[in-house]
Length: 340
Image 1 (cartoon, helix red, strand yellow):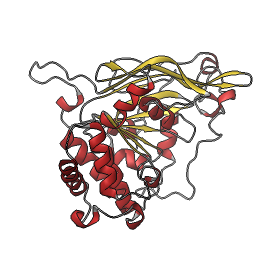
Image 2 (cartoon, helix red, strand yellow):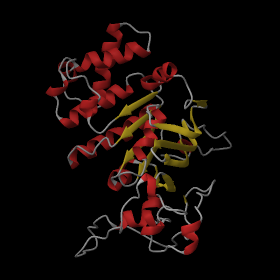
Image 3 (tube, rainbow, N blue to C red):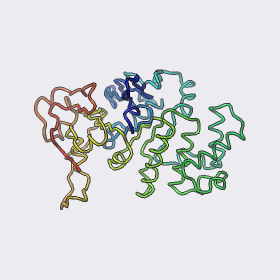
Image 4 (cartoon, rainbow, N blue to C red):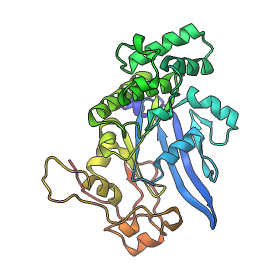
């Protein structure tokens, strides 16, 4: 991706505005003993044509962040602070009717299990056609022609013959391609892809990630890619944001973050990935586990598991520096750590 695609001005041109801006977002869940903070003041942007990977262990808050962007946080959860902007329009406080209009039309979604996004009783073509007609003033005939074109774009073989098939007649990888076509049906500006390759084998994963990159480039949409798989991040994302215990601990260009992580947690994630270059008898691991919502420690949430933890880390929460291309929320960031 070129500099202009990342919002960097070329030849004195004005920088491009982000498709998605999340500012100081906080989400809490009401518990028996008071509110529990699940997302703690995170901020990030996604530019047109950019794929931002959100990575972290289970329970880090990755999927919940995507859920908040789509406007589907349900009680006892609620957005307690911050703001979400889609192309400059604030969307986190919109009425449900208005948010339903935005979902599908301006925000598309691709989830881990394609069967949860597809109606098993309806033909694939009908589902795509209904989505198009719901959000655009076109005839059914024109919508069907566009549905066929979308299936071809996502690589469905013999799309003309598959348009009237039902979901169960497709393989898992083909169903995920159909879901991507469905997400693109109303020409959205942002796609939330939540673990879109987890249930697929490695060869199909590679096909789906290649497809996402191509569609992102051709359609100019922004993509928020939620995953726990650093390999998928390395192959797909332009930038990566690392989450831990509801906080953003590191963000930057994917190659920089993966090769020279600044945060000890990111370094631990990288060290746990087997290398084909260096033989090891045992795999590295991060000691301990992600804290429960009601037991997030004071200061840096990672301090009980961090090999560099100092008294200062246990008392004060580090902030993510603003304005830097590659930044980490750490009192003692790593220097010179290198992977690959």
